Length: 230
Image (cartoon, rainbow, N blue to C red):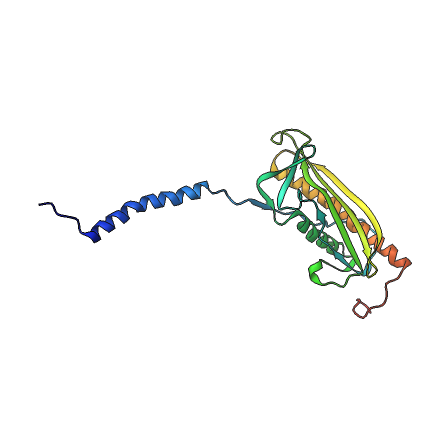
């Protein structure tokens, strides 16, 4: 007489049979899921020209405006004219405009020549606003092979200094910098970005302080209870 298996025992055997398959599926997903991107940031400007004016006005640095190709966390590269692509598995720590805004604020602070500087979110009652258009922020290969060509890190920003509360533009200028990477290695590309952006930010800080000081010398700031030294 054939003995039928106990239903409980049969269920346990079936469950055990499926365990290895479930484990293999989880391992397969871990192997096929892409690794998270490596995150990169750049550094603020720290060295400035001698003789910069020390100013007692307050500055608001707006988030730069940029086109969608560079208004992203992805690190842009130009392998051919009029076309942007992106490095794989690598990103900026924030979108390029937001990262540059923070670095500009830090650069002004590092100058030790301005009484107060901040972003929109700080609620600073500004005497001047610095507006920037980020026109270029990419590594350019000029049609060469990225694997064998050391690219140019290219940065270009158009700046406008706006006097508050009248909101009139008192100065405009365009700043650009290009730095050739030491090699095609990605670490050298990031280093070239750091130098190029540092040059542009240093020039923006120096220009802003001089233009603002010249404007206030002609048209003094109105007295205000919350102004430092008032």
